[in-house]
Image 1 (cartoon, rainbow, N blue to C red):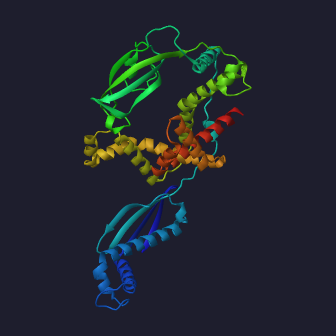
Image 2 (cartoon, one colour):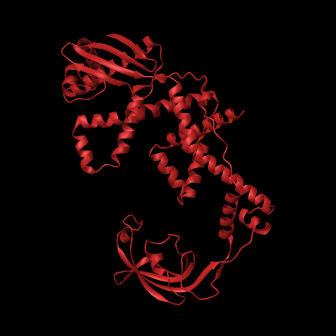
Length: 430
């Protein structure tokens, strides 16, 4: 078998060979002889099954194994010629050609390697920017909001109808037709009117009620409601308003600042300073995500030249096509699946984005290594744990979901990117 390796570029090598049929036949003979020593077949002594009988029984499997063995030997020779290790190859080898004929098999396999990134001068990718500032009015507005949220609830002093922003204290029971449903009843339930916590139409139906009033409110559960038996169902709630609560007036002082921040040493001054820092952080986060991060990525991709492993680009194209498919109708998907030209056109649509994404990933990974930046599994778990808490989800279930669907690497890469860009932004300030 004559093996030839051709370097397409720094990230892709084409391996070509013609495997003679005589080579395949010899391998089949060897495998058949080995198999005959291991199996038992009626009419023959155990371990003495002749090769012709083994071939008759396992011919197709022996051929597959012989061809597979030849391919492995071909790749071993290719690694030696190209002076690479098997661990240098990214993903599975790509078969470009596999033509079987009477004389043998013509094979072309593309090996994809991790590209070399010339990590020099990359700090110039950091754009100039102005540090976000916060004015007194913004600080006061945030402080007023926090003070209002911390103000205690008190019962309404003078009777009036229930209005937006009031907290209703009420009893309710829900019915599907004439039958009450499980989980649809509560006494002295507290609900801020206008908060959108209840089923659409419920809070609006309570507006204008007076203390002691009983009312029946008809609503329709959303189609995506968590309880299967209630999805899309029309229900009637029998409601009785017991009392109305409103926020009591509150004045910011050291005691209230300590209650809001849960810091016994807090003062009005430290409280407002904390608000200023928080607002600056929020503004910088917005600036970073909407302007700085995309600008740094674009600059790095444009300024650093590298060859990309073709199989990784194709995998990213697959991912982007699958994402597009999620927003398509069944008819659109079936039309593409049955038309190779349409599928190729769709792949071409996302090819540029896929190429940019893959290139950015290799650049970020290389620069993070140069800057000695890493992200541990514990950091990823902590990030997912926090996100789950903020979203009101079970952290352990969220981590299991990310692990099961192989989403952890993407989260880790995103965190690595943010760490790297933060370092670059800090270097730019120095």
